[in-house]
Image (cartoon, rainbow, N blue to C red):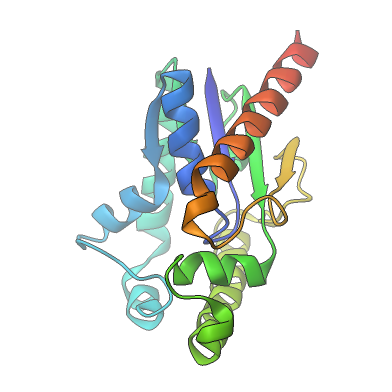
Length: 197
């Protein structure tokens, strides 16, 4: 059971990859955490720290992190990898899931449940703009490094789940909404694996 989860920043891919790993009793590995560690940083705000991160990131570091993650994926029998490149670079995963989410919803996700867009329009616009720029940066980085286009329409992600209308910014709805999405993801993976037999 080797599963790769991808998606744009703040789409929910990390939280759902973690939930999925817990549900399936698999190891959870985060590409983002591995990259931060490789850059010898403690914590990163991908939007606020964009310029300093661009200076720190290098093709050599990116490729080494991706090689390590691909090796970890192939060498582990039960793993959920939260990764930008895993679905493109790995030949050993059983399923690859793209978590799709509208940019406005992603911006609200990044703001958190106690900070609604309607009440904080300037912050919302700044985060939305930052996420859009990070999307463009990601596409450029992976095109330059590997020649692939990072997007949900890629054949690398046979399972594509749009959660835009399935989640809300309200904390009191989180438990039910997130467990419903997790059930949907697990069901789609199960169907995909059954089709491969």
